[in-house]
Image 1 (cartoon, rainbow, N blue to C red):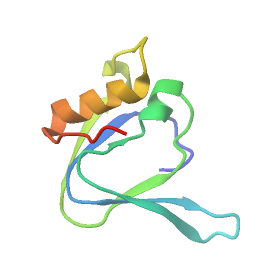
Image 2 (image 1 turned 60 degrees about the vertical axis):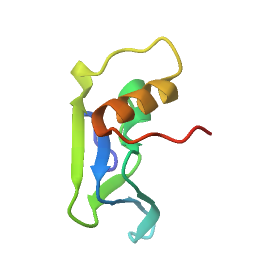
Image 3 (image 1 turned 120 degrees about the vertical axis):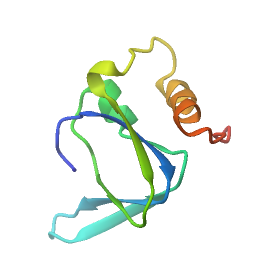
Image 4 (image 1 turned 90 degrees about the horizontal axis):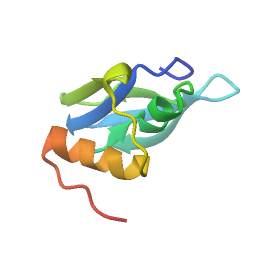
Length: 97
């Protein structure tokens, strides 16, 4: 949920997740639809800042979770670490940008 303290990292294995925020007028604004292999909440978990958006499953799927206290501290690029984590948990190859 948006504005909650980070509990950990979510890795989408199967299915889709709608990522949204609550706009100032109280309406839900959809940011994107997450697809399998995406790592959710990585930046909040690494930075210890509140979650920036809410995630809701759209259809049946599988979401893997790594608790914040179990999440390793990386000295290198957190994005690279997140990609490797996603690959390890899902077996899905993450495209290189």
